[in-house]
Length: 401
Image (cartoon, rainbow, N blue to C red; front, side, top):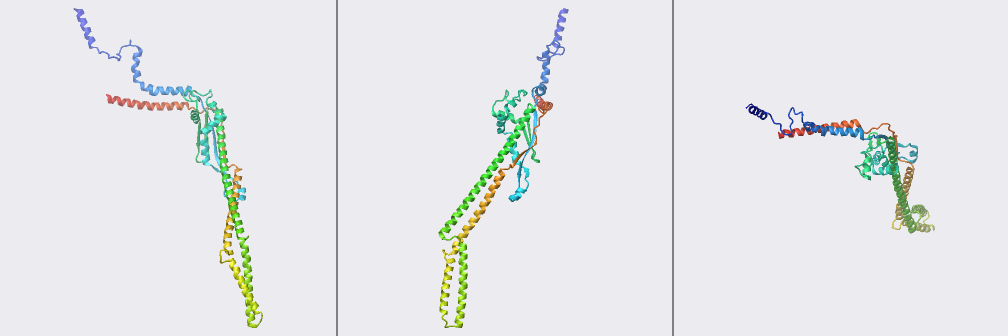
């Protein structure tokens, strides 16, 4: 009997004890495996591990042990132009040339040093591929690497990450920074880009001078052709009209007409005097004949000067027009010749200059990467993401409850 009662009491105690659900750990289960006890902690802190610990750990590994040091060489330059006021040649020779900022050309140089043409030049003359694949480079930043293709486009993208340009709009000074895995490579690349920019400026000079000479030469040829045409028209007029200089002939005709008119007036005066003093004088008839012949000659001379299309006045109008055209053509030719000579002289002098203000330096300390700042930056971003995800998960849990 006691055994029966003892067994019933044990059964009742077992029934009254709470049964642990599957997946839960009951207090006092010290004999449970260690892996089973860690599962709730991992589930509880998975967001910290995924969004905070793991990114910061990877960033610390990358920036602390993998990424290579990069050295920066800096150079500063500006593009200036020379010019003088629009004054006479003598004054221009006596006037000192003035330097001014060439803003457009400065922007052109800055665009050129980060262009594909600059990359091709560096690859051809300065071993850019060897510089980007130095043994000092890490597996992520060297070119080519395990995730990028070895082609021109990928090389250009990698090059742009190594070069930075900036222009101070107030002073017109441009700053060029070049990064490389050794200080010598950074300095050599910066110097090569500076020389390529100067080559571009020289090419712009040559193109401007060539265009100016071409335009001036065309204007000079047109002016010469115009002068030749006017001279041919003037020669044809002289041959057609049988006259060398109508102005001189008209002046001679006017002088002769004036003399004949004076003689006619004098003869008429003498005739009147003769009639008054000796009406029966035999000199009166010859004087009257002389007056008549003189008047006819005067009328003839006047008819040759004016009054018809063949008169000297018509010839003078056409001749004066041709003379005016010749004078204008001669002045145009003189101006074109002066313009061509000025263009030729300017072509002998450089109008644009790339002036180096700071030579490329040889760095003695790597400036990149910013290891501690980069790790702190990743930590800050990861912390923001962690709290954002935590808030979203908490909101979803509240709605489900």
